[in-house]
Image 1 (cartoon, rainbow, N blue to C red):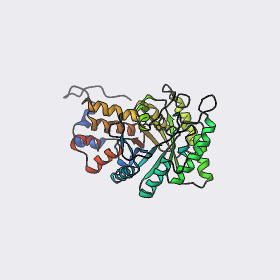
Image 2 (cartoon, helix red, strand yellow):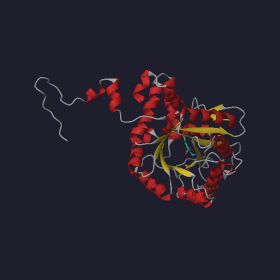
Image 3 (tube, rainbow, N blue to C red):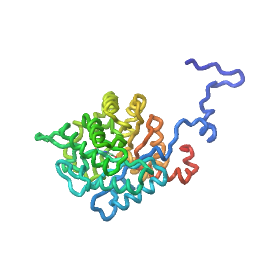
Image 4 (tube, rainbow, N blue to C red):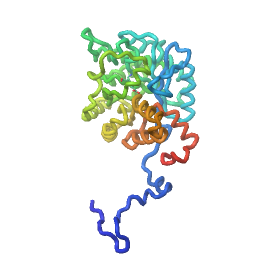
Length: 345
Ligand code: PBG
């Protein structure tokens, strides 16, 4: 493309002036390419077994482990504000090597899914994290073999059992997040053979062994021994995200996700361009913690930073964004954004 370089006779200076489209709020609004809608946002929530009152999560100010009742109240409020869905995580009272609570119909996550589905019906999309790390005493996403390694195929058996329990409890979408090979096929097969044809899979497709999950460990009382580098992706790699995408789609994923979010926008862009199914991004616990910590110090304008970060996911190609800000931000849109946030309308 060649740009005109000759100055005009009566107005020396550049002929091409992109600033023209930035001169007023009205013209900026006219040419704005991307926007946020509450319906694009999904709220991740934590529910704690046996809790009598909510417990704050120190590294995620404003986020808490809910009791069953407060979970229902907060989810209902988020849905009334217009969020697109909720993603549930369970914090069990007892953990063991197999993560038994994950597939127990009386386990906290399955109980909470059932309760939400009864209260909210199909008014929103109820999603479940499908992973063992919240339920195992060693904190890994799968079961271990005799040598202490995460056993891929034995873990798939557990995921099948979990999938059935979650579908029977009433989850609309299951979110396998353990990064085991073949997990989408295993979950799809289990669902189909039990007749849960309409229960969908929102696959955590490109998930990295990330330091940004740090605060999540506190959120689910995890006591992880070791690290997740033998199953989650190497932060140095982009290409394998596309391989994981191809596998997840072939195995039956209905939606796919990239996670963490902001540090992996390049991966999100590539996955969004290649994916035949809808794509989501997860603004994870550490991203939330960074914004909150800087805002508490007065170093960042919190509300604008929140909206700018969410908009970045949309620009990079995400349809759906999972964020701990979902309910709050949906409330801002419902009540009308204040003037200093109008660039996000
Ligand atoms: C696995 C899971 C994790 C997160 C979502 N699902 C933790 C991990 O893989 O280490 C992290 C979410 C966050 O950090 O906000 N159950």
